[in-house]
Amino acid sequence: MKSNSTTKQYRGKVGAFLTISLSVILLSIYPIIHIIYGFYWGLFALSIMYIPNIFAFWQITNFPRSSKHSKWSWGTLLILMPLGGFFIYLKAGYIPLNTKLKNKNSELLEKGIYQKVEVDSEIESIFEDNFLQYNKAVTSNNKIDLIKQGFNKTESLISDIEKAETFINIKYFIINDGIMWRKIENSLIKKIKEGVKVRILIDYVGSVATEDYKYERIMRAGAELVQFNKVFFSKLTGEANYRMHKKLIVIDNKVAYIGGLNIGDEYSHLSPKYGYWEDLHFRVEGEVVDQLNKQFIVQWFMETDVIINNKAEIHKVDNKLDCQVISDGPQFKKTAFVDNLIKMIKESKTSLKLVSPYLVLPSNITSELIEAVRRGVKVDIFIPGKADKKSAFWAGKYYAEDLSSYGVNVYRTENIFLHSKVYIKDDNVAIIGSTNLDFRALFLHHEFNLVVNSNEFVSDLIEYTEDIKKISYKCKKSSNNWNLIKKFNYQIIKLASPML
Image 1 (cartoon, rainbow, N blue to C red):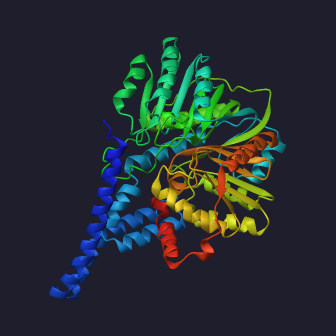
Image 2 (image 1 turned 90 degrees about the vertical axis):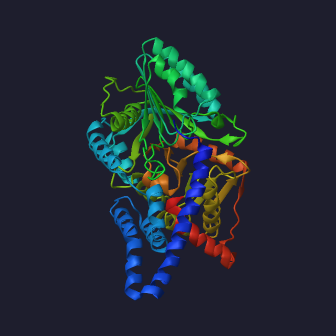
Image 3 (image 1 turned 135 degrees about the vertical axis):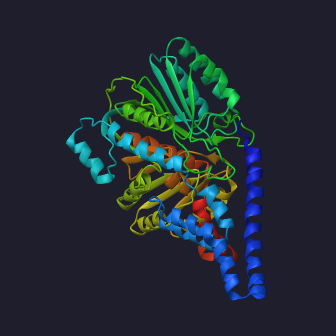
């Protein structure tokens, strides 16, 4: 069984204390050895302390997705904390060998599995001009509906599950046991009895709060349930890294659900801890659903070595909406989301709107946002006023105040946790999906997003951001007036950002 999240948080605090204490003790021992035994013995003792850290830094510099920011941060930590820095690396940066092999195999599969959909050359040129191409097809006959709030998503999803005829593929970062999951589970069990194939892929760490036995009911009914990227030595190795952060359900290759909402009571305002939970999800129909289903096929293969062949047709809808899948994760050398977001920021002409539950940014994105403001682009960023992760929340406050000083408009919701992920350029292009604006999402997790080119759809997203603005307050332009303590704290936060 998996330990509950409260126990894990307690262990994390104890582990951090012991790691820091170990480094302090080791650094204290060095001058004692130097004084008693002489310079060379002291140097030898110090070099022994740093051997594991050297190995860690070599691993980090050879990880192709490591940003310069990450390398500087880890390098500084490993210098300041002999041996202790290595243990932090094991928890927050280590890439197990089996994960490397899975990533390599899935990359080869993903390159070969996407088929080219015939598309108007004019449409394809629009995407080539606006976004970097990462082996994914542009699709044109699609329809996307916005779904606000978790209970609306649950009701819509159950309605589509009831219409399923052949298969339902489910992939989630979090499935928490509760009222909402039980409703969905009951519908799934009913369809299994009717002969519908149900596959469920959940992230091992993301769903840690739900004990394994609570999934036994649906498995006994006939569902295949697989946990993604199990960490067998979770107390020692990087359990927080290389997670499957995607949220996806595909039904009969006809309809898909993507967005910010996991499955759990907190996403429908039923958790006293979080209260009102502001989020956005999307119901997708059309050609791109086949592309989304292939996202499931790739990661199912990563865990099972089985390639699913649903033999499902590509369904078109009588609606003109152009979109493209951006798949991202540690299996790729290129950082697809970061590269495309930067390109989008660079090419914005009038406005940028970014909605994210976290604001912990690498320096290249921060620089491009500031440069966009300087050339006259109106930049609005929306972040939560309530925390789910305290470290990331406080880091976001510093980033928000700093960006505000350069003219970026940062809006924080009034005591509400905002979990939507929406990125809009001007009035016609948007990125929607699972990626947050923090280092884990941008560089370490398995994520996917849709790029959408549609004035009508983007207009609906802009209207959504205006609704968020009504329940938000604007962050003050204060970093120019920070005292020395605040300036020091911000530098420490930036240094630690890749580990938050």
